[in-house]
Image (tube, rainbow, N blue to C red):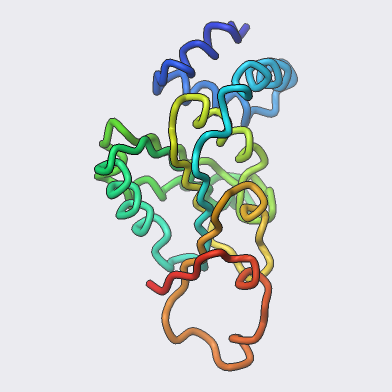
Amino acid sequence: MVDVADLAERVRAGERAAVARAITLVESRRADHREAARELLAVLTPYAGGAVRVGISGVPGVGKSTFIEALGTYLTRTDHKVGVLAVDPSSVRTGGSVLGDKTRMPELAADPRAYIRPSPSAGTLGGVARATTQAVLVLEAAGFDVVLVETVGVGQSEVTVAGMVDTFLFLTLARTGDQLQGIKKGILEIADVIAVN
């Protein structure tokens, strides 16, 4: 049984273990957890919404995690609290996920002003996990004023993250594709920022 009031209080106090537990709860598919998650989000939502939300997408291997390491450490050095939700793809055969993005963020992972949560996509399409929006609310209620959402590494049409963030950044490599690729829209037409790595 989850003590929702106690968990909410500890999340609001910024306790890392409570933040982790709350995100696990909102990601869970168990019926009793789903009910507790609804109650928890009802308590936390009035304290959410104050963060700058940035979605970061791009093809696999473009350097999203490394970019987040650099941006996140810059932000924490300028007195921001940074929450990172790193979504990794899940295997279509086994359902498992490596959850390895955090390994590319060693400095940020050790920073007391940052919190990194790897999560599996668990078959959800669009580059994010089923409960990414709810996890953002938990981070905001815990006092993180910048939330970075890293997608699984997407193609041209996986744009779900753009609807849950204030700024959508598409990270790309130089000299990829030809003129025809350049006029195709898809993910590029909804990006607020295009960064070349």
